[in-house]
Length: 386
Image (cartoon, rainbow, N blue to C red; front, side):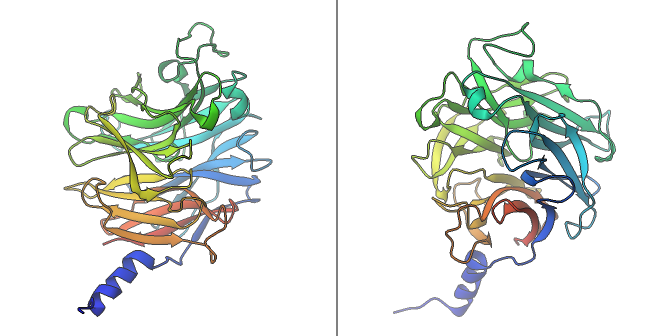
């Protein structure tokens, strides 16, 4: 019998089982004015600075309440982080789901302009799903790398379809959308081709009364072609229960969304692909190579000449654990490299490593920011992938 070479076993071990040990704390629960921090997102500026965003939950760990959007900066590729800066404070109510992106195609801002999309809410999600409240959609921009921010712009009328709006009775729609949430994680911008400059935000909503197994949820996206002046909606992803989603670009300028399946009947990532800039969905399928425990996952196109995809999620069908980074060289058809970023000793802790986001640091390294230790901290890891 012919056995694999020692080199094979060494390389297999490095790609499949190595754990990254340097976990740099970014947001620590119980510090800097907030009981808990959740829902991380991260971007890299043209200067090389990294900016990490998350929800700062003032009084408790719940999804509703006094929740701010906060940020920190790193000028040394994630080795150290600044003190906390509050970007959005919606008084005693909820501001969350930060979805940042850097617009580098607007000639009015040759140094780039940061867009930060986010949601506000006036009731718990289950109550909004029942029609007792509303979620709104906003953005802020920064032209100085996130040191200062402009006024909040409400784009709810352009990207939401509530039948019974409680904020502005002048507009209403037939779809009866209720709950609403951006991605979580970063948004994306088309950098070439027909849709160059388009900023795209993956999102999801519920429609009508709550249904069993969360079938009232559907993923969708919204986008702007004119640097935030106007916005349009995509069609819905056709799978009931499609929920939190992250978008990325493929090598042929198609757009892919990687989606959480809230129904929980199939514990894998749901994929939707569009060939016209995220307006319509050509195909949807479950990627059974990407197990998922009903959780958020993050996806990012890296590389300059041909897109290489990076994907990160808790790669487990039951627990939010076994956070794994994967690399695909063929637009997500296969995942040739993978690294376990964080896993508990037993592998059975329910919330050991949960939501994450990805950022390209340089041509050899990816940054992963993620929730760990039962949501007690958000940490940053730098992983060399090539």
